[in-house]
Length: 107
Image (cartoon, rainbow, N blue to C red; front, top):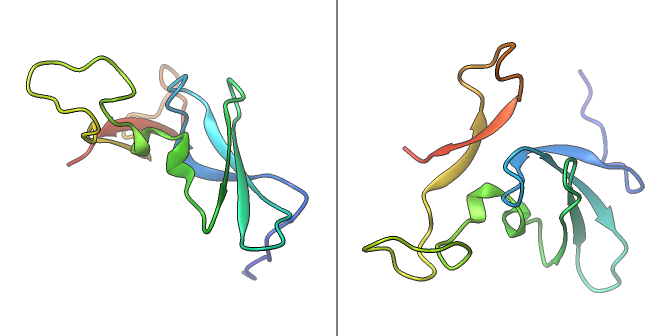
């Protein structure tokens, strides 16, 4: 199997889930930048978007980047603390849960 070079005009799937809707897969594409690499990310479900420069960081819109300043905090949770969620393969994939990638608790 030959590894393909990235398609600069098209989108590719990532193994990440949108933190806004908790259901959509995140798509990625390289965008033109004269200074450093830039990537645009979009949720395939709710269309939340983010553009990053200086490297690929899907965590700007995926569950992996969720912190407690994004949502109301419970007792003992500090502002800015990582929520402990990760994007992971669905361990119970089937007719009732067909998503390939889901949000789960970090181990």
